[in-house]
Length: 371
Ligand code: T4K
Image (cartoon, rainbow, N blue to C red; front, side, top):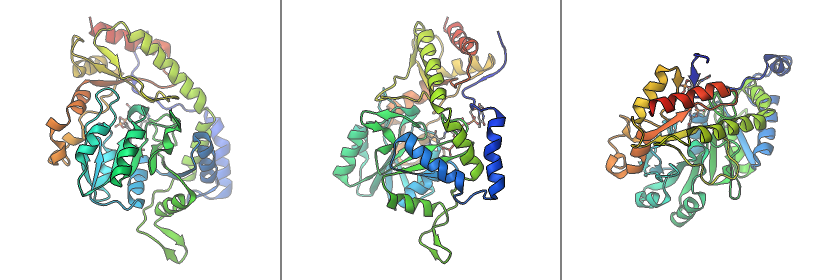
């Protein structure tokens, strides 16, 4: 049995030699950024692969979120989930918007539509929801609320690369969806991200917004930012895309082995996949219930002591962080489902190259701690 460390994720890297021809093309062209050939090719390839109308690449997912909120010209308050990576709420603050936290559904761990409506005030301009762990939000209910109240909907789809819900790609819902292509994600461009847009007019606005708002050499239409993806990132993405189906299939095999291997352990409950017609197995979150002999944090530490680095995504809750906890909507009494999830969820190692032996080590360690 290997005693090397096992991390929550590892990137799938193709043989280095396969990357060299891409780099040679970049070297030959002398174009390193600002919408070069690799960038154009990756946008075209991703729009086709993801079956979305338009996609605009960014240097990372957070700057894409910031830009998405900016182009929608939102004001006032935006209703969002406290159970996410901190970038979700930070993107609101970077736009001068006030987050209003709504509790999550206790089963899916996505924002609960019933709780959204309670948070709407005359200052609310939008809903920023997250497809947590790649499980689609209740998009129909959210869209019905948004229509009733005239709100925009932005999906933080950082976890939802390639996920389909009942009506095709989950990325086509809402006004805009935002992806992350970070090194820890299912599909990676080292750092990277993208906004999925419904039409060419919106893509044009987004494209200009990530390039300082520049329209032409003499015209600047908006207070844009530098959010561009460079050519090396885009080239890496083109290479990754060639293997993405095999990578997701490998993740599915790991998930199925966990399902079987953990089934007999009382108090360890996988967070159910909900609403996915096609999943991406980005994460393998389990809940450590009170019927397990130790609590989540004790299990986390015990795994760490055995060289297994699981992660408590998402603990602490965003609403408990110093810059947000004084908001009225951050009151823990109003967020019981998020609190429970924050205390119970542990994300186990999952990635395409996780070997069966390594996975068995994880399962055996949990079994041992649970005895
Ligand atoms: N919205 C949501 C819902 C998100 O989850 C995220 C990012 C964003 C927005 C923002 O998107 P980006 O701006 O990041 O594109 C990681 C990622 O840094 C972050 O991208 C991700 N969510 C978040 C859920 O997880 P950490 O603090 O856990 O990263 P780190 O460095 O501890 O990495 C975790 C493990 O991954 C390491 O133990 C080892 C492995 N790893 C990591 C890196 C960076 C590698 O094997 N290779 C690597 O290069 O945040």
